[in-house]
Amino acid sequence: MGKEGIVRELALAAAKARGLRQDLNDRYTRQFVQVLSVEEEIKSTLGDLRPFLNQILPHERNRRWREAMETIFARVSDSEHTLLCLHNVFYRRSNFFTCTDWELLRRYRPTVMVTLINDLYDVWETINDRERKLATNSYFHLPEILAWRSAEISATESLAENLYVRPHVYGLGPDRFSSVRKDYPALSTAFGHAVPHFLFAAKHPLETLYQLLFRRDFLLVYASFPITKTRNDSQGRTEIDGYRQRLFESGFLTVLDPLTIDELRFIDSWQPGKPALRPRWPLTLGPPMLEEIPLTTDPFTGYNELQFNSLKSSVERHVEVRDYKMVSQTMCLAAYRPFYGGVLGSNVPPSDKPSGGVDKELMYAVAESKLIYAFHPPQDRRDEAQVFSSVSFAVSPTRLEDLLGELHKVQQQRTSRSGQDQNYTWE
Image (cartoon, rainbow, N blue to C red; front, side, top):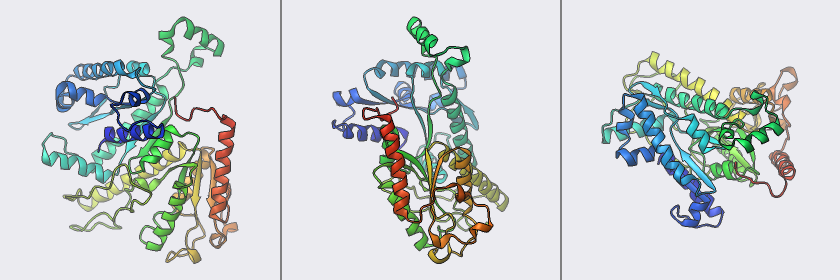
């Protein structure tokens, strides 16, 4: 299932929550929500996306893209909510290109943007399995997929930040801007604020994406917890999964979970002819929008030790930056046992410093002025006074129930401030 499939499932979930028929062709459902796709419109015109991707004249690609958007505009006004699917950046024949027409997108007036991402290895398997079945000259290597994803994220961040012109840049205060909008309604569509942009892993449950876009009364949190220390220990994984499940089932949180994209699972050292990856952390939060795709061939075939270590370093850097982005797009960070180990740590030795990943995420949350909470039981508080710790910035209950209670207070406070008639979508 591609992005269009995910978005259709989201639209059906929204229709169900509204009490409408789960049929996107139903008249009343379409009046509420509609799924539109630039690439699907291009395919319906050309019969296949390949002629568009293979077009060597940029102005012809751009023309096709604009024609697809014009077709979409004819249907946009029919619905309360429209979900538009598109690739902001394409990758073909070792080159990146974009056809996104900012003027047309301003006419569409997006209020939120979401970049869907999936595990690197799943993307590799999906593309190359499709290529084995029907050759389209779309074979990808792992570094190319990393680069394409990075380009897509960066381009969409820039688009979201700069799509609309800020009125104050031209000295337009609220009163003057209201006058401009009244006298020049067509011109006013160029003005607006930065569009919220979310990086979202496709192995989250559908419910999480629905909450992100249709239940803004839920508190958006990033779940931080030790992964490396617990990955190879069944008791540790069970404990971490229990924490993740408690957050997910809270009934008032929208949880961005770092394990919904699990790429940093390399073996410790390169061994020719041996598997280069450990098993993925099991998907336990509920049915993911995209299940894990088993590898049918080895993506590391032909690699030597230098290439393996180079890719491993690239993935490490991508994971760190990606997790920072996910922290920055939430309201608060909820950490679990940053000093995991010791008496409560199964086979993990005790530690006098936080888990490396959790520590970095905590400090990044501090820099981003996020609210920070950490479940930090007394058994983990070992020699803390002797060492500067990022945990000192967190509200640190010693019971998990108290952590959830503090998060619930924040959610209730935000909801009461917004009022009872608040629209909890991004419209």
